[in-house]
Image (cartoon, rainbow, N blue to C red; front, side, top):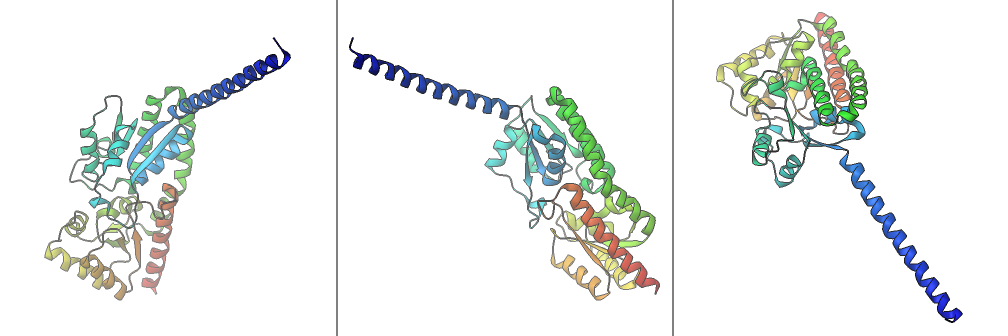
Length: 312
């Protein structure tokens, strides 16, 4: 065989080795990537406040998708879509608020049952049912119960990462302590002060702070459910604002109606401080605890201004 033919054979052989090496590296990388991604648990949260907490608990071991995140829309009116259905079907853990707040999520679960999937219904965890006040995330004690259950579910799904999840849980508890300590501080300063709210979103937080929420329950519940409040509750609410006994009005920025707007305008006319609260994290890039802390800071400042001025 001539030297030229040998050289060509060697070159062809070397070229084949290069091609084989590239193919092997490609498939090894792809397999490694698939293996790495498969170690992440897929979590779907009906709302971003639970999603934020789940993400902080799961860290790099989870991929969290929150469905309801828009601070400019009413979460009660959310309608699911096919993308949501796919996300629910592929989730290892689904977190729903429950109590009728996200019934669209229950329908998605029923449409694609998965026996290997964990489902955390917050209302069920707390012993609540449809018709109960669903704004559980505004109660610090409820939040603590929920994160404990999420940690338990994560460990159940990925026991090999139990130490990692326990460390994340400990860190989150420390991070939540700041806003929960602010609640205690406000309670020491303003427990018993009379306040009002356009709907029952503020009930749990007002109870934690020790405030006296005097606005008619029938009014708050009807607005939260998208119904017209009884006429007598409207009159009673207006009289409370006009009498000067209310020191703060809490206003849901995501459930605005002509009636709640008129209540807000009456409070402004009577020089009653107003604090807006939302049902999803606002702004959306904040953590759950920073969102809560901002709301509490506004409440604390408003109460300080109102109570001090009323004593002068």
